[in-house]
Image 1 (cartoon, rainbow, N blue to C red):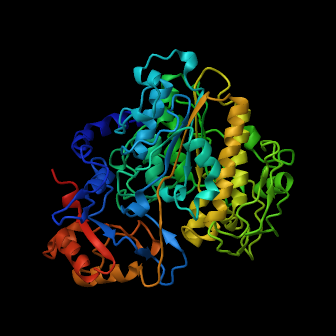
Image 2 (cartoon, one colour; image 1 turned 90 degrees about the vertical axis):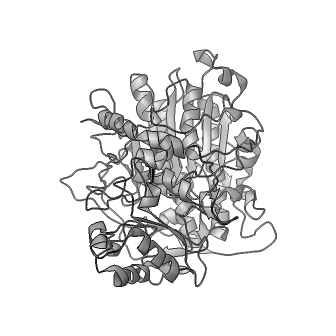
Image 3 (cartoon, rainbow, N blue to C red; image 1 turned 60 degrees about the vertical axis):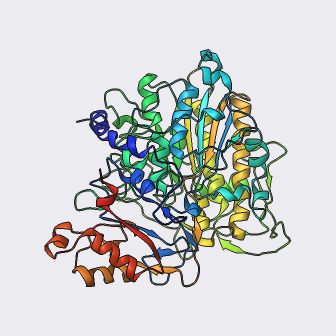
Length: 590
């Protein structure tokens, strides 16, 4: 059975979703007025195709809680919960066919991006997509669907600002960093101030699959960063074997998959991220979707282990200009030294760092990135100093760029800390622009499709916290990169010849002293009360995530207990940390 046949089979389960989609994006009210009921969001996360992959217990923690697999957690913020802090997202549409200066107060979510872009490009949306066309953002000709081919956008692009909170665009202490984004993309585009994830899983793999497919997690099958397959809990993407760029757990076609087949593989398809799970979720299945018909799209992970682009060429394409050689020195440290004067082996990222962009894609006369220089808008000052490489590690020498099951993957964390600086982002965006230019994106009448994930923003947030000096400073680089990409598009594709969406996969909330739950305590308490090994999660391997608890149902029933018994036990004994526990029986009720 090929992937297209699997998709047809999965369609049979979609009837249940029709009932769920009637529910509003905001939480419905529970029995007690004012208390949110997250069940509709959790159902959209799991129903109908996630039954075998979904947990017996789905925990909603209190909105200021973080959970950790380590007793002494070092991260500053996290996400994954259905509260507004984690699920409210920025959503901007800009370019050809988009209203100017519009701020609709209607609800919008990530699954709406694909149907909207498909409408604008005059192609079919994926059959399983349950998002809507954001008609209030469109100019009248697109609403009437009477535009001639020559008037269609030449390329559609989606940029996900990983872990960007919606209030980064409104918080007076932060918004100065996103001046270009606000004054150009928002003021001359359409901005959804009430955009929010319609589902509960505010995680990278989950949301990027929604972006790519236009289908909520319960339909596309990516219900978490890890999912349950038989007795295993692999990563949803890029696992089994690890680092293989495996995408077969995605049960729905992406817009890229559909466009390829509908347009005889003529569109240029690009999807890039430092994390495979983001690039794959948006870009889709490549040549694996329909082996006799689909081609090898450019779906690439910008690998921290080698500082080089990387993929699996059985399914995807890594073009020659992204292959490292002495004549093509594109490794991150070489690229940054040559094009930015940055030596990441010794240079620090500080609050006073100034970067001059001399790359081939720099904006003439506007290529200096200064940041806020250690001061918030209210006058509060700050300092920081962070190394760009991992101390004590040896720089990688491997030039491993294509998956080979017979060759060990070169795990090396030397560039791990580079991802916590803006330097990684500068290199990664240049690799995107290098690809767009070499492929001739938007330079003919065949519509192209480009996805890019600003993953490093998430890394900075986790380490230093939301609204931190580092986040505020980093966002200046995000804003610069968006302006740089727009400059390239205007120059090479033409003004008003493209359409883009700028959004986020999720928000985040900070950690506070006394509000971090070591999940070993939770797991131990459950097993002490209901039996050793009643939890199937492999806690010591830290998978899957802690809001999804898988139970040995036979063992539980043999001991005379139900899912509800365990749920009420957790609520009673961990009420300081847990808001509510939903059972699988509730989630998949008729």
